[in-house]
Length: 150
Image 1 (cartoon, rainbow, N blue to C red):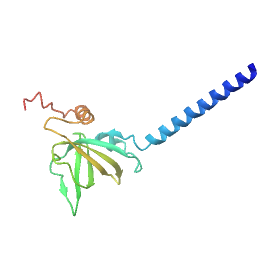
Image 2: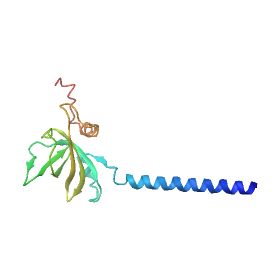
Image 3: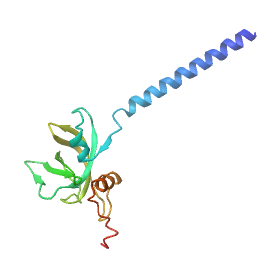
Image 4: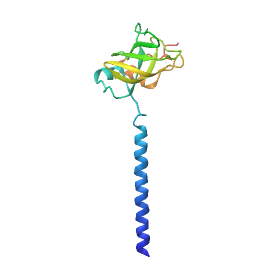
């Protein structure tokens, strides 16, 4: 009788371990496309990611680079003060999107141009995503709007 209880306990432990490993594998598989790393334009220029990698890029929309093409295609450059990366986006831009403003885009780097699938812009006058602020501070070009009295 003791041998049967021990055998059953080992079976339960093995089944629980297999279920736990299966759950971990499914969670990892689900996250494989859901995790997009943030890169500043200087990082993208220094070490360009592969064309298959989806990532986020953020910075300021460079002055004088925003052009609207045929249809819904928009091109501009995003900068962190140290480097600029050309961006191409097909779709409708957020209302507050403009030159000199902060933005974050999700997409891929193809032939040196970031082809964005999503564009996010600031939602008020003072907000800027933390990743963008950190990248701008690293380049020494960030100015705190609260400190300037605006």
